[in-house]
Structure formats: C-alpha cells, structure tokens
Length: 80
Image 1 (tube, helix red, strand yellow):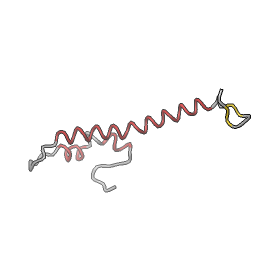
Image 2 (cartoon, helix red, strand yellow):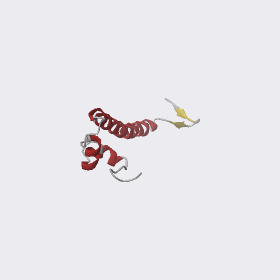
Image 3 (cartoon, rainbow, N blue to C red):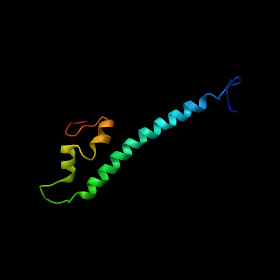
Image 4 (cartoon, rainbow, N blue to C red):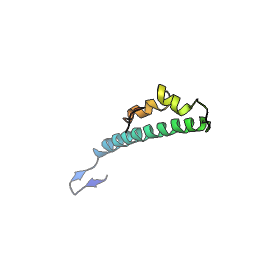
C-alpha cells in the first residue's frame, strides 16, 4: 500500500485518481473529434474557384464540426 506522508494511507485516492483520469480522457476526446471532422472537410475541399465549399457549407449548417465545437465553446460565424 502506498502512503502519503507518514501516517496517511493512500487507499482512498485510487477512486479519485481514476475519476480524474476518466475526466481527462473525455476532455481529450472532444478536440480529437473536432480534428477528425476538420480533416474530413479538408479532404473534401476542391481547392479551386467552385462556388460550393464543403468547409463553408458545414460551418453554415453546423453539420460536421458543430457538435464537437459547441462543447468546446466555439460557434460558427462568430469571432473567437
């Protein structure tokens, strides 16, 4: 058993550390989802003068990045 200091067992710390780890994993998942969505949009980009733009269309209707972005506090069309 690990000890904190000389007289305080660390037995009760495991559930707290485990909960903190799960919270961090959730926080890391959201930016990863945003990255994946943006990678998909960049892949769909035609890189030319066409009027259709999958990136702008997604921002306009909130379809690809919006769910993950809203969790991160980002909103399409608003300056950050």
